[in-house]
Length: 149
Image 1 (cartoon, helix red, strand yellow):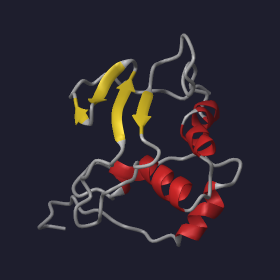
Image 2 (image 1 turned 120 degrees about the vertical axis):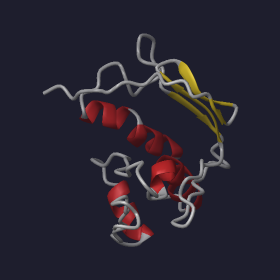
Image 3 (image 1 turned 30 degrees about the vertical axis):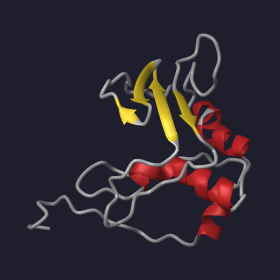
């Protein structure tokens, strides 16, 4: 702890991919990550969503691509009552990811977790390009969202 100046990460092992599939395929489940960007982060900080597409959709065929996209977009927006988000619809915030379903996958490891995923060419946050042709634009257009009670 002293050597790392209290920036020590922790990894909890919760089970095998089959266990993840059990939860992931339940109707009420959303796709999310609880990774933190401090110290040496968990590899999923950079790859939770690409892992769903690459491993659980393409490789394991546990979900269809449409089911996965729904669980990453509209389902959480409805669950957390985030208005004007979660769909490509006129008047909604333009949070858009352009990816290749045949190549998208996470690349991070526990030794080298800070690795951008493969297959994601463009990301728009509130209509502003954050990733343009695989390169970060360094434009910050996101904002904190508050859950309405």
